[in-house]
Length: 120
Image 1: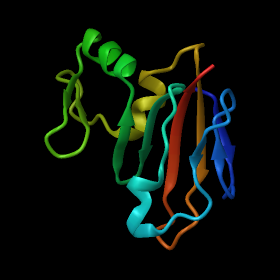
Image 2: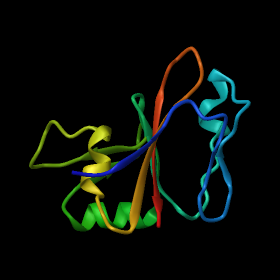
Image 3: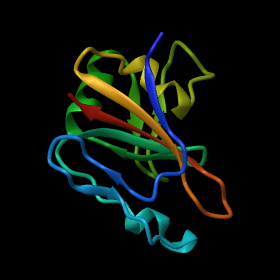
């Protein structure tokens, strides 16, 4: 089971290593995608809407493990062995002693939960 560090509606979310402000505190709903800032420590980011970001290292690992990555309409991960794969499965798939998994609420009327994996 993957440990997920849950933060309830933080004003902002900072990388624990370089202190980059990944999730700003003044975002607007329509600007959500553009408001996130991914430093080199971020492995992935997704919401219930789908995968927002995958690092090159995460992409290489997934491809080496037999997953297909499609970027035609956003980022989609297909597993030929499991048709029910969803973005919410990323923490389990990329479970590693080198990644900390975070979840926090996005304070907007959308009520999104944001999931981010950060290299330790």
